[in-house]
Image 1 (cartoon, rainbow, N blue to C red):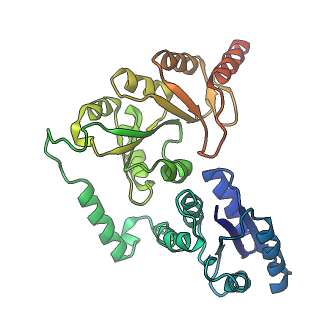
Image 2 (cartoon, rainbow, N blue to C red):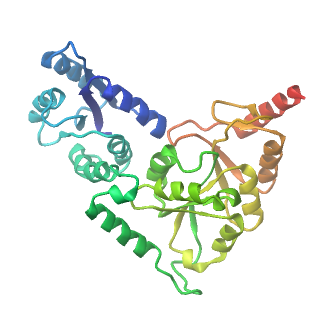
Image 3 (cartoon, rainbow, N blue to C red):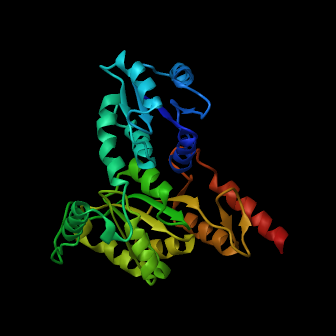
Length: 331
């Protein structure tokens, strides 16, 4: 696996490393080094040398640094110059770049290939709101993509094998956020993200925010549960690889009972509210939730309890037993 070293002036590299792990999960073969205000070139060089030694595989190394021409860049250049046939540096580090570099290691074995690939993602991650402030070229491209994606397909048209493909179905009270838009999207490769919720479908602001939160190249939209049931039967979605997001297990149950063919649910996040008990750091349940999960299990649905792709799976039966015990104690 390609080794990655994040380097910056001040604590930026430390912070972006922590943010990357929050979104994409714990990473192996990654180091982060910083140049403190009272340090000089020799200090950051020594830290980089130590970081390289910490990598499992030193054959392929990629440096991501904050500024082109800055001290971290200049010192990294000394290392890359001795391995310029394989190693690489990319400057202008931002979070989309780091996440894309992590994800690219699943399919790319060369530091230089990853370096070339992540530059466009880093650029795409720079956007402005309101959209009228976006540079004209970017706005024009966005309008073109929207036009292409909303072109109507005649009813009755069969695309692919006529059956929508679910690459991931997830219960997440936060719906489309960083961990989904980057971590899960990169590992499941959907062509469309669909939020299935009667409540959100009535909320124009949340619908707009979900649409804007979609990663580059993936369209996101919100539909009520009944519409999702209709989509399941519509052959025009036969070429669609969908990542489905439910706000609650109750919404997932309604969709599945209505005919949406989901065999496994990824349980990622259920926020705490009054009347619920905390089962672990990210899941809170009440009696209705526990009963709903039991109904889903009776329907043959399996559970993948993970916040991010790199997390270890948790045992749903144990979590439900713990939730029931805590609920009983609360009475």
